[in-house]
Structure formats: C-alpha cells, structure tokens
Amino acid sequence: MLPSLLFKINQNQLALEAAIMELTLWVEQRGSGDVAENVRGALQAINRDEEFINITLAMLMAPE
Image (cartoon, rainbow, N blue to C red):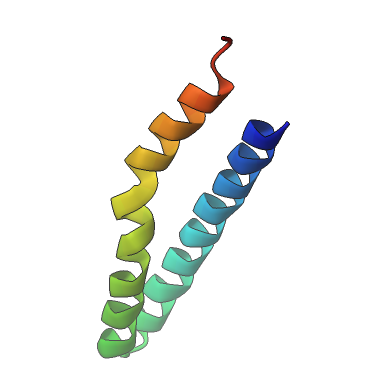
C-alpha cells in the first residue's frame, strides 16, 4: 500500500509542477522575468529528483 501512496503523491507533485509552470509563463509574459526565473530555479529540484523517484517507485511496486 505504501508504494501506491508514494506513487499518487509523486503524481500530485508533477501536476503541481505543471500548474506552477503555466503560471510562471503567464507571469513572464507580463514582464516579471525575474520572478519567473526564480520559480524555475525552485522547480529544478523536482526535475532533478524525478528520475530517482520513478526508479525507486518502480522497484517498490515490482512484484517480489
């Protein structure tokens, strides 16, 4: 059950990242490039860790 929970949490995190990126583009189009760049920097952690999270979840969800 824990792997399924972690999978859902990860999916929610990725959905939030996508929504935040949409807002970032909107902010950038209105002239706030510095704010947009700061947000992109903060979101890099999600991108950086995504592969590790996916591999770990796959291992946890694999039948033994």
